[in-house]
Picture (cartoon, rainbow, N blue to C red):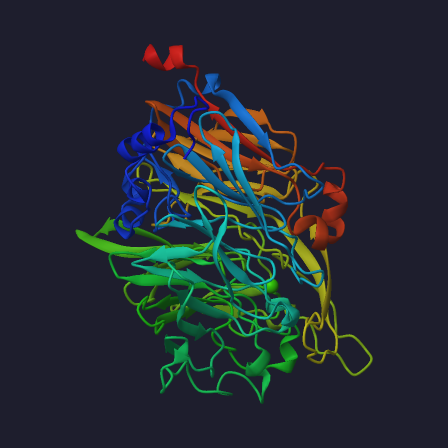
Length: 591
Ligand code: CA
């Protein structure tokens, strides 16, 4: 909390502080507040603007009629020489914004003025192994703590007033390839995190910690065959919880280095009391080394938050051979059909298919392509399992010789990558940031070596069209119909948000934060932020006015992995800025 610069006698100022800021409880973020975040507009205390991940705001002060007057009120630089991709979603609590930046940095910022209140820089070792840029996707808030995961696979809890470390805990060995880039999730007194590292043959896992002190509560590995454990006082309670049979969907010992990293973190559905996570590719990429479905890679998992038990799983790409990580967010939403309320969940996969599931049991309701070109599968069967086109699986290598190269679409960076979609409760549409690209992909021999890249594949990504790669799409989850689309030259890599003001926001690598009419797709506003926008925009209400904030800073996986596509974006400038917008006060007053 900031105090004014006016010097008062100590006793008096302490008394005032006690009166106006009664203890820490004034701030302390509670479980109830987190559960209710979806209904509150004055603060943002969850990643996803609500645990369900809809990224929908009921605010309509800002709308399609007045958005032409939306303008910046402040911008703040993350500074230093550390630029690269900025992919976080800001959190807002009591007029303070908490946000992460590249290289495991955290900032607290006065949301009214943009003044920096404190900055925390994690001291990272030289041998971190982030696969896809030194990014981070945001903090969790709980009690008086600001908690985030680092590139060397630690959880760090900072005091919200000072940025000082309250506790720090190692989640996994960064030398084996583990890192953390997702925002943690707090639910009913448990801090839940996933890990990254599927490109290094780690064993993915989802874990719960006590947010007050960092004590491990349970651990759930996400490769079939590994036991899960509940912990008490730092010790595993005997009789672990089975995670399926070792070697059943994996050959030999490959389950011991199977990947399936839940690197994008997860969401929570209060109605079913389920954690909803996605898991990454099986390791290695060369699928000929691991016949079988390779559970629970490239899947969606529903977990019991009390002990990490897997309640259901839905595998989008069994026996993945294209790096189609199934990490994408599982967004809870309800809809009416045949006079009944359907408790559904929607997810748009890297593999090009959009899935609607029954979130009470993981059963497939329907699925459909959400990009124009899919070559690896001919469609989905009645259970949502892909009907493979066997001629489009990259061939097996023969000793020194690499396997047959095939041209596959989507490319491994996905029809949709990490960037979250949004769901409007008004239009009933999902707003999906997608990309149209393909790749030449082939397999090579590979053996596991701790901490080394474990792919066994080579690739070159190629655009499918001259004039665009990115496509923001409005999709009806009840019919699969694309209601509108907006094309973008560069691949889209930023999160989406929608509001009751009939607006959809997202950013572009070209540097624009853009707004669209949610019903028609007409672009109604844009602002050049100076560098690529990869962050997830947020909106909130403060002093009777509606604010919008987003991070700007080009980087992420595309320039690192993008083949022909990287050439297309090589001249985009890096950055590291936090921008905040609102309407001029006099215009709002006239409403
Ligand atoms: Ca991957």
